[in-house]
Length: 115
Length: 117
Image: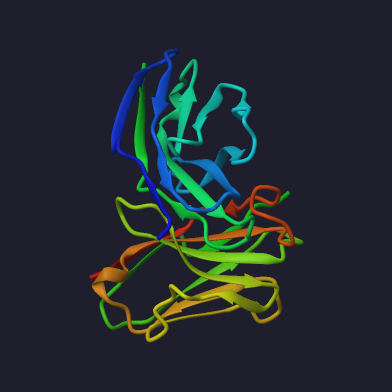
């Protein structure tokens, strides 16, 4: 079974500081994709960043970057210069085989950014 | 572009009653998804449509859940009869389709929070 594990149910960080959210996944596939989604209280899931498994280079999107460790099956999200608007649930997700199908989500990490 | 529209925003029903949720995807998006998100968990796919055809409904409890996308645009998800364990947020998402979700990522609506008492 395909699984995505987020081991930190809750985290907090001071405004302007850096925080890292952890994610591990399990797959036997060689072709897969990884994502981080943000879910604020509005409930809308918003794509933060995505990574192709065959790319060695870690993806970055402005203040968001990932540390993709393929051998360890680890895909952590680093948020730099944290802002109050970053307060949300963060979900790690994966999909296998380049399909349009079943995106598998972790249980999420609740991030609170404190002023 | 307008986002994925969902209604209602909230719904409270008693167990054994029926309920329906509506979703209008982003214009031009061929693929539509319904996800169930139980409190404290990540979303779980219930059903996926490609235009008006079902691609994957393997996790849809078909004895009580049904969904349709008759004209390949908007979609309705129905629960009949509802159980207490159906209390969750129901998220609709859409994508252009035709490519992997990396190249054609999901766009989500704001969801419907269902409470079954």
